[in-house]
Every structure is written in C-alpha cells, then in structure tokens.
Image 1 (cartoon, each protein chain N blue to C red):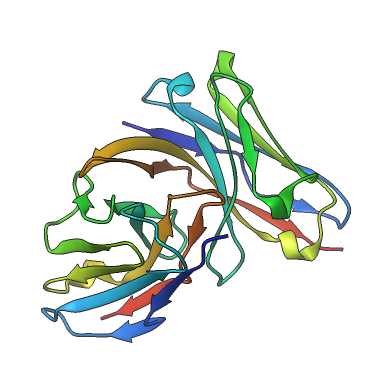
Image 2: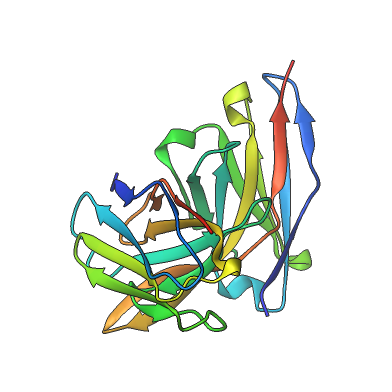
Length: 106
Length: 125
C-alpha cells in the first residue's frame, strides 16, 4: 500500500497568515494527489485534484503543487472559515490511501 | 449537482452485521463508481472499496476482504455496504462518495467529488 505522510499534524495561525501543509507519498504517484477539507461532524469536501487543479467553488487563496512524492497545499491568506482538518489522498493505486490529516486552528 | 443521502445511525452488538445505504441523485447513478470510506472517532480516513453501479466490478481493500459486500439497486439509484462480524474496532462514521475522473496535465486522475453525510455505526455489547 502507498503510505501518505502529512505534516504538520496540527497548526495554529492568525487570520491573514500564509499556511502550508505538506504531504509525502511512499512512492512516486505522479500527479495523482487530491486534497480534502473536513469540518467537525461533516463529510470531507474536495478542494484540489490532480495535485494542482482547484475544484469548482473553492476559493483561489488555496493552491496545490507538487508531483512525484512531495506535495503541498497552501492557503495564501488564512480566513476564519478555513478552520478545519485537511487530508491528502493518493489516487494512483488502490487501496486509495489518505494522509493522517492536518488540523488548522485560527 | 451530486447528492448522496445515507441511511441513519446504527447500534450493533459484536458479531452482528450492518447494511448502510447511499441514495444518489443529481447525476447518472450508473455513470460513476461509488466508493466507501470510514472514519473512526477522532481518527483519519480509511478506504473500504469501490463499486461500479453499471457492472459487477468491485474492489475491496484487503483489510475488509471477506467481511464487506458492496451492492447496488439501479432501479432506485442506491448503493449498499454490508459489513459482517462487527467488533468494537468497526465503530466509525461510514461515508459513501462518488468518483469522478478528470484530465489534469495529461493525466487522467480520480477524485471523490460528492460525499454522503455519513452513517454512524456503533458496535457495543
């Protein structure tokens, strides 16, 4: 199975800060990397697919980058509504696997 | 717009089985795979398997092989996940999700773009 490792596991930042979350795959997954946001008691919500494509309706302050084994999710200017847990997920091979999550607190 | 509605919470005893439903609307049910993902309390996301509503195509995570069965009823646009021999370790929120595929920089990539609200399955004696 492909292991996905996220860091940090949690972070605290202020409104307006630039925040970066990293995700590393245990093997080359090319660009098959998605990012999801999950708020308490809710289902995950797709933010970015294919490592860098923004899902419709997702604010442009979120960007994704990377390829191969190393990926990043950046929030350029943190907003109160960004408080959530973020997960990366590889879709290169089954079983689909997720990172352990990054909890972002404002 | 993809809309997935799951069945309600379940409380089961160890050794029992549970069957969770996922009713789809807003898109062609037979046109997209359905995935199942679970999340234990306070934990991360764990993939269970996928099902092709348009065929008998199914893939299970090895961890659940022999205990999980994914089925569908295309007449009512509903997918099902049945998990048997439940233990306390199966206590979790179970989600269904729709698969879509998109071409990104020349790569056809898989994404989960619509999720059910989740079904809590609690296993307790």
